[in-house]
Length: 510
Image (tube, rainbow, N blue to C red; front, side):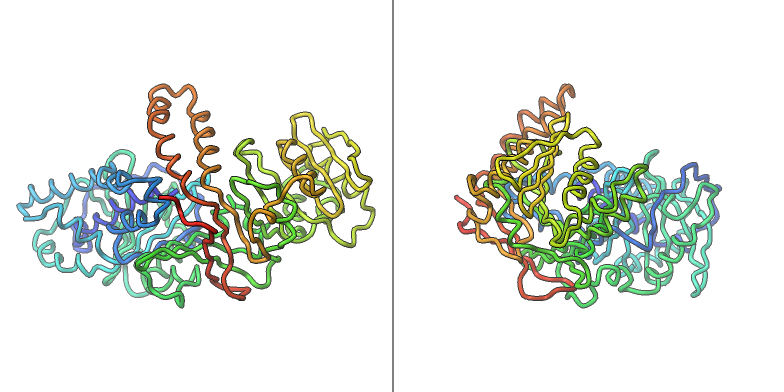
């Protein structure tokens, strides 16, 4: 998820070397922004990175054994060859040659070694593509006097506007790295803000968007502005901190899981994980769910669903929403599991029925009708308390006692029924799960599923498929030597950032 973004961020960080004196730049050609307003609220980032050194981040990530085996050293070298970084390096060399400066690539590395904060936002496809970089000009300020003497003016740099900040006027400049990349720089005092696209700040008429200006003013005035968005002010200072909000992790469905707010990864000699919880939200875990999940999943993940919120959202989004009873038939958190003998897009979902469920038969029939889009037919189970609805496209929904299971792959629903009937072992029989268990991961099964799905997705892509067939299996199969992991909440906290442990019964095989 971070690969393409970090290459761009590395390039943006170095840009300050060439732009440190833009506050004194003479007027250049009129900036013509032909893009469109990006639907991004800068006041609500989807993810934040705090780092003592952007340059060290890729290599430090490789200190996680699993990532080291999966990504290799080539992953770190990727950023040295990213097109934005190369374009910036060419820009710096040209400026140095034309202005007779003694600048070199070492200046770029020095800038990348500065502490920084980076905020990310999702694009229309859900990828964390848009970003803003915030840093203090500790290193760059040493170049100000030299740059001021030059009175730098360059065809790649154009002044966009002057923005009132309450502490004076902050000039906004644009740098065109190449035809596909224009970056904006906002500078005031000893702070710099770099935006990955003019559309984060400007509308199609080149007017400043009010919410974007409010965010920029906050970043320019408050060192902890971004940290406060993710409650990181009191989290301590690690070498690197990566915090991802629930909205990005859940592809925009965070409102449906009110008890969970995000994940955080910290590096300070080693990596650690924490979960951001809302004590006023839904229940996060349920040990009984692991007793109905079939054995040997590739991955299982607890979903702290708030079903009343789901009902409200579905009613607003669908022309033909389910009846008032359907979604309220469910209670507590749900569990989503993926299995190696099924598809990535066909997990099985398990949830508990509400204890006080009026008109049970009608509620469950309405739930099945909604889940299977009206194409399901009911079948009786082997026991009196079992009912199964099967759709025309292999999807199925089943009820057994107090449990409901649904999947686009009906075979997984059958496995859940066998597990509830104790004819098939459960995840709880295989691992020491509890109310504090957030996830179960089996790297060996995940690697096989990922290999199959990726190769199928590249089918017909010619040379790209050939490269994937030769490189992907070997890399993914390095995961086979890792044991299953349980992600467990540590301690008894119900709100704020809570430590998450990665537990296994055996160490990775040599």
